[in-house]
Length: 104
Image 1 (cartoon, helix red, strand yellow):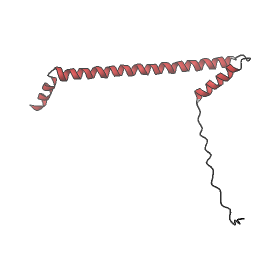
Image 2 (cartoon, rainbow, N blue to C red):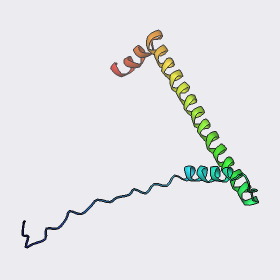
Image 3 (cartoon, one colour):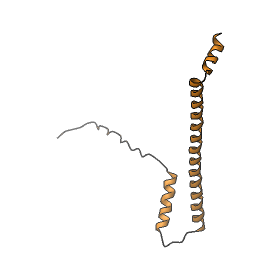
Image 4 (cartoon, rainbow, N blue to C red):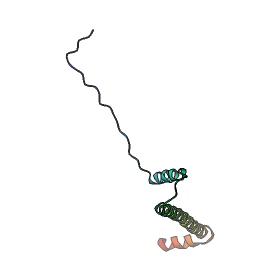
């Protein structure tokens, strides 16, 4: 048997629980729970809340689609500019005239 005069402290436990709140997931879980409860009738507030959620979701979807359209247009403008520059460099004497302006 071992005799201990001093009590050695135990190491502290690391107990970290991250907090994460996903509003869309929370709303979806609430809606699914309401749907599962088939016997209850929906109140006016629930219907209004669902409509607001659907409208917000559709607005976000349209906004993201608009960003894709802007990115496509931007790409086409840059591509046209690059083609124009390639045309001037290889098929005209624009570079020679430009350089002769500085070399004189």
